[in-house]
Length: 146
Image: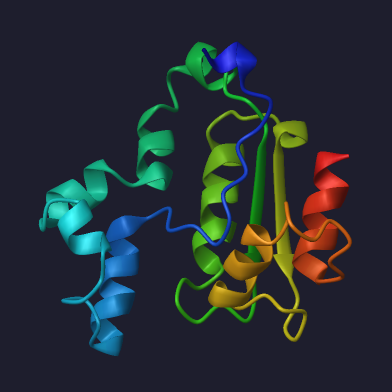
C-alpha cells in the first residue's frame, strides 16, 4: 500500500495533539475544539494518536520508517489556530528518527505571505478550480508537485 503513495502532504497540521490541546486550553477554546472528541477526551489518547510521538516510538523500526513516502510539510507563520511549531517539530522528529533528509521537506510561509490557517485551507480548496492562483501557498504547492 505504501509503495503506491508518492508523498504525504499535510497542511497546517496538528502533529502533537497533547501540546496542541494545551495551546487551545491557554486560549480558552479547548471545549469547542474538534481535537478533544476526535481523540477520546484523554491525555493518553492525545499522546497515543499524535504523529510526532508515533514516529518517536518507531525509532527502532528503521525498516518500517524507510518505507514511508516523502513528507512535504506545509504551514504558515501567520497561522494562529495551529502554530507552525507543530510542523517544525514533526519534521525534526522525522529526521531524528531515521527518515532520510531527502524525504522530509518542510515549507513554512513567511509572515505576511498568506500563511494563516484559514487562508491556506481556502487556497488549497481552490487549487483545482484556479490553477493560476497567485497565492504563495499555491505557488509552493505547485512547485512541490511538479
